[in-house]
Length: 157
Image 1 (cartoon, one colour):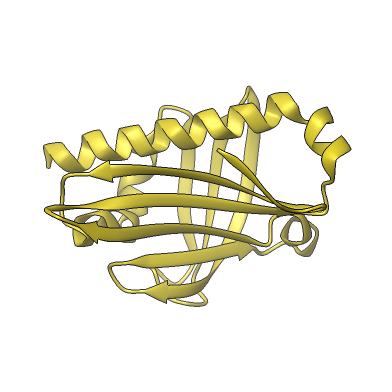
Image 2 (cartoon, one colour):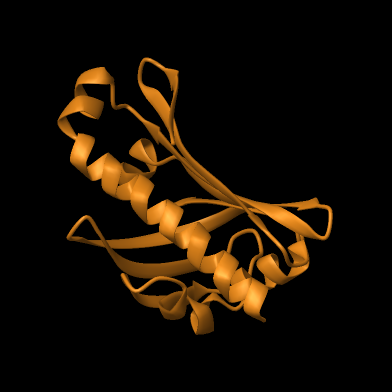
């Protein structure tokens, strides 16, 4: 879902209830080098570039296809609440201007948790949202598929 925050800022959000411990969800991302390509069929490559695991300052590189376009990004982790949340940003300053923050949350609920994915975009007004409508729809679809796939993987484990 796309939520407008201000004239030039908006947020892609997706969430799904997963019947597994929140710690299992967080651990899935700790081991992303082993899990990335099985998480989504459009995920191509993942590698830790600085450090390993979910710790502030660690960096990772990933490649994926969204809407038929290959995405290649290097990311730095900027905030971690163990077993509950982590946020990251782009290493490249230009990408970071437009994508200042991405995050995954693991909120315990009953016997499971609510998995929440968020991507904040900056510097793209209403005209930019309209011109990039297809790309943004592809991002929303990809995020929903990631949530559904994560649910299936963690509930089977």
